[in-house]
Length: 528
Image 1: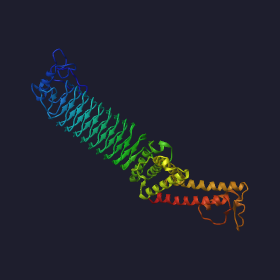
Image 2: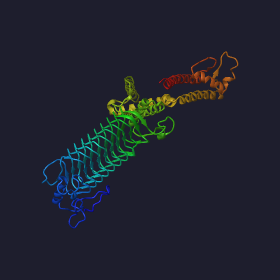
Image 3: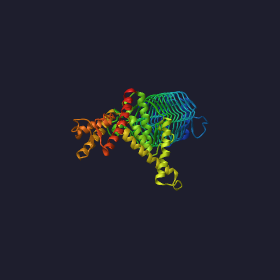
Image 4: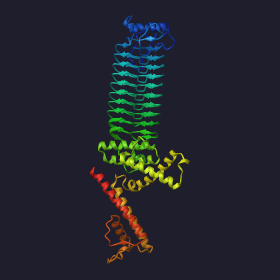
């Protein structure tokens, strides 16, 4: 008997007799062989000719060294290639086989499972429009050229774990009826799963895709797992539908990442990811989001606070807008507040760099905000041109507009920081609000006190006895600062003319603004 032994199935024994002068049969002989004799024995096996004890099962090709390609598209047996029936009854076993040419099963129907575990296909592999009724296993298989599984149907489990695709991998429109596993697979070029249908889970944990990963319009009924995956190009999940959880805890993502118009039924997980390229989350819908335990949060620094590292300003705005909407849907108010803070912060960064594109919502989805911004832009540009006396004909209009907008948005950003971001963290922090109160009141009281100590007549108490000493100390100045900030204006103490009156007027204006912000923040925190 042939001495070939399977590393995957130790109990398997080849039934074909060895060739003269060899320990191996014509199928397992690794060297050069008689092609015509190989074809004769091959057809005897699949036709069921000869005694059963002297041949292997019809479609069991474990460990075979094929001198030519396998074609499952019909044709003449006199051709230079091996011809398989278009419909293969039972299982097809090509585990540990070495196929020198192209393995083509285009349009074939395999009524059982198909196993290419550990196989080496030195040409391309085509399963275009093929149907595999059972499981399909390409575990640790190697396909040297392009792999084409367009519109293929695999009705059992699909196991591509540890497989190596050295050419392009096309799975456009493929259907996986059960679990599809690509854990640890290596794609040396693009991996295309656009429009593919995964009726259960799709696992790409630890996979390596050297170029782009395309899942546009893909439908995944269960979970999508890309934890520890490495993607050298872009990852496109735009318009994809994921029914379960989506784990995007990439080990490395070198290109862009798009979830535009994607729909995720349950939780989206990012665990401290780093995104350097442009990423779009516009109109993505998810039922949950996980950025790591206790993240995002308002206090802290950098990545430890947000759970994600972003470098592109448009990406930052798009991501945190998606995060805020998702947390609000979950009812996680503290995380929604933190996401709202980061969203506004990145929005201003994007506006200052004039990098928000027209289709991205510059000021939310409210029309009146867009109109206000447009009017401010036009007025600001006109003012800058008037002040610096620039003739329009002298400069490139696009550059003038960009420079002017950057200046306008920088000024508006400063007002935003002074009156909204720093005092209240965009309405998310009552503590920050009351600290701001204390800083303003104490600061103005200190200013009044400093003027008093330098001999200025700052505060007077007309017609009121017994207050002369009080208004010469810090505590008297603090009392005056409180009633000025809160705009009570008792009239028992008033500032003298000049600088003291100017300081009091400025404090009253700030106090009015802060009181309005206080009402808004309290209403937002306790009335929503």
